[in-house]
Image (cartoon, rainbow, N blue to C red; front, side):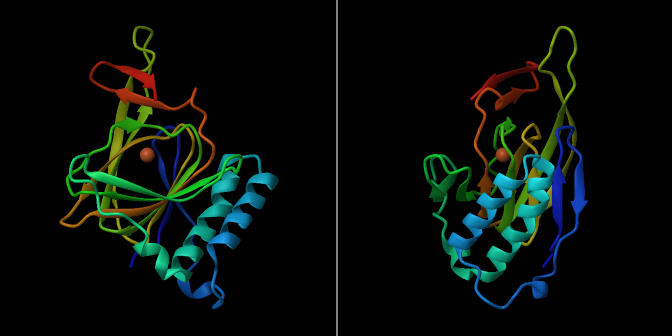
Length: 203
Ligand SMILES: [Fe+2]
């Protein structure tokens, strides 16, 4: 199993990050409620997104290593839409949401950013991320260009800055299952992009 951690920046760089090995974690169970309070403390103490993500990534890894049950908490993708979401935690005025997302093989997402920090851990299947960056012209201020793609495998954790732009495609033969953690969305900062028309709209 690959155990790489990554940071995707607003210009589509995919930077490798230090990742603890699975055997470095304490043997005691790491419960979801402790994880939530630990992340809440990080968000309170660290205002800067990159520092937040550096602190949160190892907690996500520890949670997934410790909690086998989490890996089964997904719903089969809807055959109509090709995907499904199970909200594992979402409380009003709590600064994060936790989701399990499943995609049918071949399904492709729109090109988007999240308007908040995010951490995605691949639980099973393969997820291709195509990364983009803004490349504005006077005529097309929302023009973007692709800066490459990368396939992530189970055990990999990808963290995103709020303005990181990507689209994903579920690869392989089986559904792609991911554990996703997001901060509070700034809806004035979250866009879907259309590279052909060189436009973007809030969603
Ligand atoms: Fe996304």
